[in-house]
Length: 326
Image (cartoon, rainbow, N blue to C red; front, side):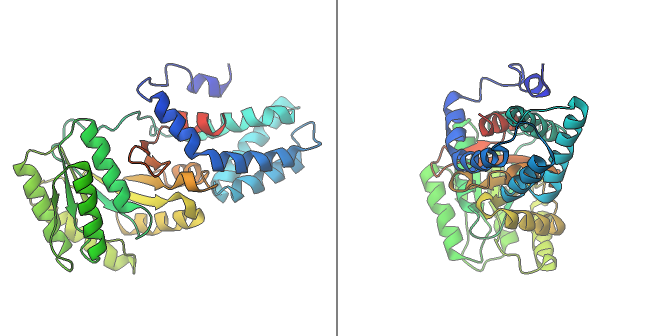
């Protein structure tokens, strides 16, 4: 049995990852798959076996798919080792080999195995602080998270601590109204830490399960960002001693390498514990999820694969690779 079949066996897959979710994922990755496999078909045209030229072409395809240079080199090295061990590998086997080796790479971490929207049971309220630059889909991601958590039976409170833009506060209000969850907000220009403090106090008073705090989408320099986020954390801890329990960085998957750069900047400025990669349905750069997951060793927790309120999914590496190579 191949490595891929072993780790993607039925006992690994959870029936709670519904057929509807799988279909949404398939549709969301369609552009990435079409782009990748059309290039792969050209790369092996007229070839009978995997040779140096095929590997060189494959390297270019992976980099162009925004898998990232370092992750691409790891994948190529793995395939070279397979070629050396098996002596002869036909190009018709290349798809399966790629599937095997990317699966193996993602399986080196114990993350990406969730199948539903759940939070740690020992923590209440669970405080999630969300960071990311403007335009990546941060507010939309918060709104969709609130929807999914509420749907899962949790009591959710939102905090509009991105007080530098009136639009950010108003957008979050719209999502709160749409989902039907309470929001704590102040006027534009208010102290973000004050909003965070009030939000946690309100959440504790309401016996809420989850608090999601939006923060400013600015990245003028690392020092300012670090100071601001540190202050927000410090003030929140006056209410909930170990808050925040997670810091979620939202990245726009359609920006490819720019998403890598944003991840570098934010991880240098604050302790990011998990990632959400959005807008994968509108891009051929779905490979960015593989690269980011490998390079930063920070779990990709959520992926956006469509514009609908249901189209934010938990990232499940088994379903992701299965869909990509289907």
